[in-house]
Image 1 (cartoon, rainbow, N blue to C red):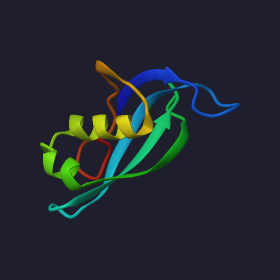
Image 2: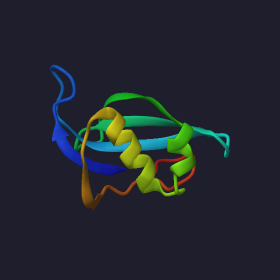
Image 3: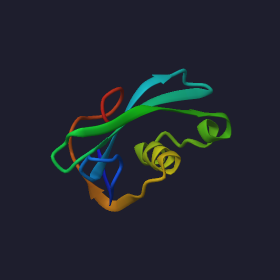
Length: 96
């Protein structure tokens, strides 16, 4: 889980400050699907969804978690806070 610049995500909801990502599918060749959640400081999920990495984006993926976080953050229009991480679960199909 990574901290993000606080943003008001939904009406009548508190600001979100964390981005959590899980890899739910990767064919190890051309595509990877992520499950993302934006959460409050207290870890309450405010929204969630799936984002798929394909094409040149997948081919340019260096295998790092940071690439996936930045890709998903860019797709969602949110900003990661550099150097600050929230520690939770491990890697793989768990939170990255």
